[in-house]
Structures are given as structure tokens and as C-alpha cells.
Amino acid sequence: MKKKTLIIVIAVLIVAAAVLAAVVAGNMPEKSPCEVVISYKGEQIKTDLTSLKLVQVKGTITMASGKTKDIDSKGIEVRDLLSGKEYTEVTVNSEDNYSAALVKEDIEKAGNAYIILGEENKPRLVVMSDTNAKRDVKNVLTIELK
Image (cartoon, rainbow, N blue to C red):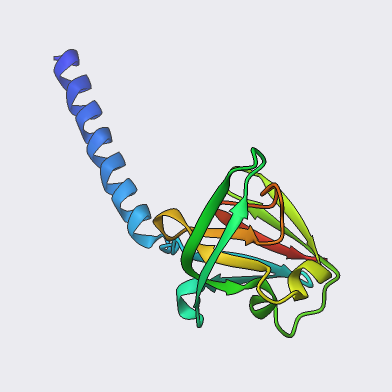
């Protein structure tokens, strides 16, 4: 009898956990894979890249090995993304905690720094003038303005 009661209690707990998980998952806001968060003056500004006017970005970046990689994607210049905001430097951070710094001159140079839609439409920083792609940041999560 005790064994049967224990099995019933375990089954009820499993069902309750599944119901709770479904309720919690249904209440969580869905994050767009194209979203970046801009940290500016203490605010966290969520920006979905697909809601912006994107341009076709074509070019070639040079990897650390010296090999080149062609870029052909939709994106936005970082200077346009940050238009109207004051900064001297920005740090771009990825899902895997990789980060890259850009000074204002890198950003203001036309056709140089872009956030593009990379693999699976995840934001990616590319800096066309880099000769070793150190600042090629995949899966961008945040852009911190300093």
C-alpha cells in the first residue's frame, strides 16, 4: 500500500511540474534572435534589428590567418544604430562573453563598422578596415556606450 501511495504522489508531482513549466514558458517574453541591447546612460534599450531600415552589406574581411571572407548580408552601420547618442567608445559583447572595443573614429568612418544579420539571423559585428578580424563579434548581445 505504501509503495502504491508513493507512486501516486510521484506521478502527481511530475504532472504538477510539467504544468508549472508550461505556464512559466507561456509567460516568458520571446526574445527575437535579431535583438541587441544598447546600454546608454544607465538605460538598457532593446533594439530588434529587423525593425530598422537595413541595407545590403557587401565586402571582404581579412581573418587573422590572412585568409579573406566575403560578407553579403543585411545590416546597419553602427554609426546609424547609435545616431543621436553621445559616446567616445563602445564595447560590443557576445553571447560567449567575447567583446570588442570600437572608438568613435572607427564608427564614424562610412562603410566601416556594421551590425549585420549573421548565422540564424543573429547580430554580428564586422569591421571592414580590420586586417585580422579581431573585432568580428558573432551573436552580439549588448553594445555599451562609454
